[in-house]
Image (cartoon, rainbow, N blue to C red; front, top):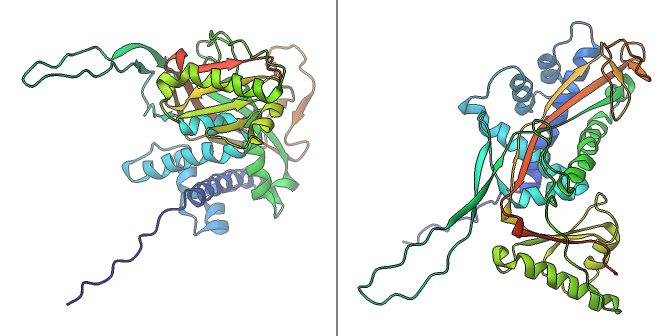
Length: 348
């Protein structure tokens, strides 16, 4: 008797999973926004009426006030990853963090990360003792931080039939630029405020002085890759470049490494990093909506209750608007400074 033929197992479409999770997050934001626009509105009831088939929306709305349980933590974790994944088209930083070592604080404090330098194996004769060497050297702390922003949308935008697409893009754009600027910066960490930029305290390599631009580019990339190869191995390297240099790299006939473009990098800047050396935690974003708030419309807002004028202020009630406050717990650390190399003022 012939055995039954086995079917081809369905493989999950990770892009579709991320898109569905981000869609649920956007709908949760809309439900919360509609609730503040309707007198006595309840976000859970609104979500049930609008998207009763989307169970994750209710889960996200409850997560803001109730702790995650064993039953729902996996879904919330998927949505956390989806938010980072959804940022990839607008953020080179999100793409890099997604390829690195992804961890979770799980409600605890900082995570101690050891830099791993594996000693070389040696040939050992039969019956002879095998040498033991210390493999863990140095280390850094991965500390919790968060990105936060407030986005103001009019009630007409919230109620519009295209609100889901508009709100989704507003959420992504509000953090994408800030993430890249901080991640690819060279500022030191500020305790209780922000992590250090990946370039912090790493001296830039000297670019090639070759007069031919293609030769200069080849020499520069070779020097960058060589500098991090001892950790990266054969191919686990990502190149991040300013827009003009990224375009030239993407037009090269052979491109064995991933190339990312970031407008946050100064022109003529190129970075090479071993992916596994970047550790990060990106958790579920928290989003609140208010119609009763007054906000200082400024990138460097002042406190409104000190008696000092802080123009321009914006009343949500007076302008029939909703303020969306996003807080995204996201942190990163470079496990070993030798895993990153960068150049500025390249000639190509």
